[in-house]
Image (cartoon, rainbow, N blue to C red; front, side):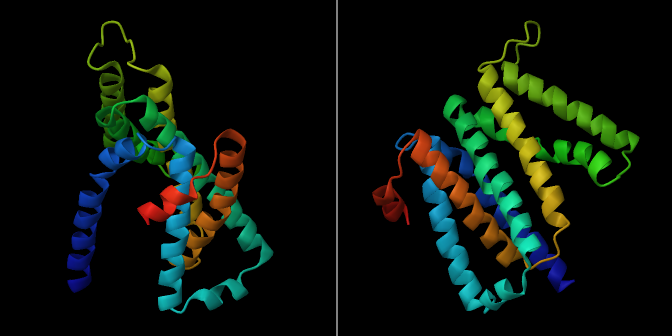
Length: 216
């Protein structure tokens, strides 16, 4: 019972924290492009996760992982943080926060749909109804209520925001199959993801180490 209360407490805290990300993203994107923002966020995440692993004495776990495990982490790192946040931050740069966040939060719908072929899950009638209602909500948000003309405020931004939810659902499905320690697994995701982020930033933008150190 005590663990259940803790779970609810952490869930509420997570919801409160996530409710601020839309505003934080939009403010940050005033000063950084979407690749620079992801570059800084990845560095800070790696540092924080390194400290957590050190405190929990879990660095030794990396010696136990096989080359296949590291390859799996590289693939997950490509999905998240690299591809997911590149797509999401670009969507936030094109859309108002109040549009981008709800569109991105359609990932539970995508999770249900993708779990049918990937996890062999069966969908119930009420699940199907919820999905239909969810997609109607996406259309309403994307068209800003103009359902008669179906004109999206920013078609590319809407596509990217919804697309990010697909990427996140794929990442979640493949990650949940991985039985390794969650913190160590997340750390490796960010390490490999940062490699992709660094390459993309060097090719299409430029790193801002001074801004990253200031944010940290």
